[in-house]
Length: 397
Image 1 (cartoon, rainbow, N blue to C red):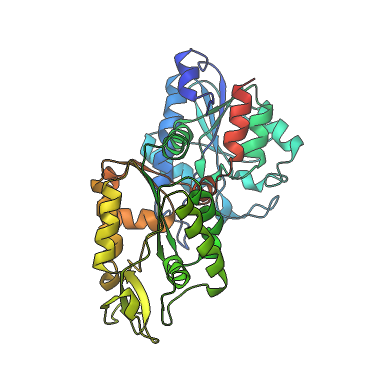
Image 2 (tube, rainbow, N blue to C red):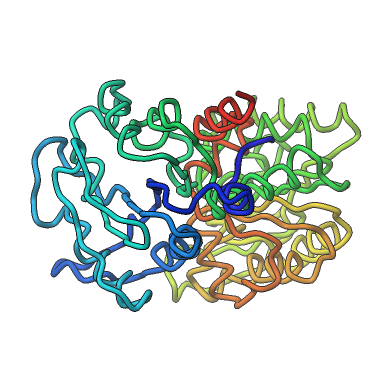
């Protein structure tokens, strides 16, 4: 995908003295007292800001935070704690500017944070007048918030339409490159892991991937529905019996292409859903009526691990069992370590997937970790994200 990048503009000497508006993703978790509990997104957004400052730009950065009501400011909606934390990390004071739509005073070498962009009336509906006012604030708009790339809002899409120059920041550019490498031009075989509690939430992803991947590994409640589709009993396990026909269709679509959806050959069961429940490994054909399937068994995990180690590209979304409970974490750990040890280019995304990656300490062994949950899922569905679309359109002139 061809988009203009901030690095290109800097290399061409087009940033010095310019007013640069950066849309970052600074939507960080906070406790009841307003203290930031996890600052990964702030840290991840700093390189883009520092690149622009180093190139001599006057820099404005904004983000959404939480779910404020447009036009109604409440103290808990303020980006002030974010500005303070970012300032600590960057070693500088970062003033927060409220009511900024009609004008911002910022000089080359300076950095200001524009208050929560979701407070502006018309932000979520991509109001054209609001977007034009935002665009008038800057010479260059930089989109560096992949987590919002699936939404067409005034500060993500509209401003990119009207700004003199619109480009991708380093975070967004890295996502575009990783997604292209994994899905547009993958090294084969391409294996996808799609796991989670419900087929219904991932059905469009499963259908889209079944037309493209060489192996489709399903896990969690999704695997239980596929086990039903394969004629196996699953006891009282979480599943969606009304979607069995859809699961059969995915299996058949894969089979028609000479590909496969591996169905578990053994599973780990319990009688209750709890951390201290007794875990029993069973052959997939021997699940009792009162069993809950909470993980894949060791034979299945070994089969999947071998498939992942032989892959050319891996796309991973979701743990294959209830990995939060140690007795039912072995399947996810085996899969995670196989992804880490594989020579394949791997891209992983989704909150639970990131938690599993952190739990097993394999961050350095995954090719690319995507930070945008909803945006990552929409990419897997085969959708073109609004942010990618408008930046590509602007790059094409």
